[in-house]
Length: 284
Image 1 (cartoon, helix red, strand yellow):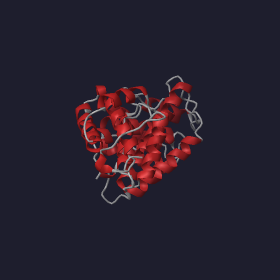
Image 2: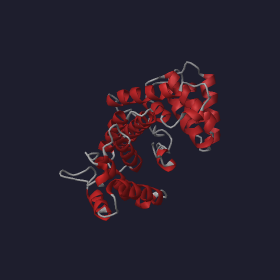
Image 3: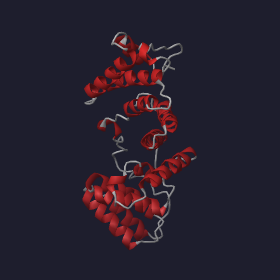
């Protein structure tokens, strides 16, 4: 049975500042009229966030065919994320209705879980589609004019982590351990110090059919190392150590394993784990 720590299944926050269309930069598409551009600029640069959201909504209603609609919706998503959760996920849906391949919207959608919207939403299928589409769009995404190379690189890393994490969690919930391992390993190739993905990968290995005890124990130890400054450290360490003792038969060697996990992001070549004799050949 899966053991999930609530603090670890929460998705990492996306970029908290407004979508990076710098005030000195022109929009990526031209407005139809000077008045339209002026209204757009005034709306997105309001310092008061609720006022900004209201101004953007007015712009969207006033200029329903504006080529700036998509960019305005990106700002609207960000504004509602800071002020109104109920409008935030609706704004994400509006953005993706406008452009199903909008990378910012797809990344935001990984945080809009099933229980945040109407109960009749096709949650699991929709979320799986978001993962598939998000990774596809990300693979060929070109840097927008309004972002620096550094900002776009950071954006892509976080987006990849979020897509892989959601994909891994969906696989875990459907008892697809192999799919979960593939997604969480994909996330750790990008961000090897991701606590949420390291812990989740350990669960995927331990709940496999058959379980990979050796890999699962290593990544549990790695989770303890990464949780050194996390509020969840005590929970993680208690569970990890208890699991180690369950499969090893005692706590002998636990501290050595933590030292090894601190030095390596993946099990090093030659890593071994001696299971309790009663487990026979479960160790892999």
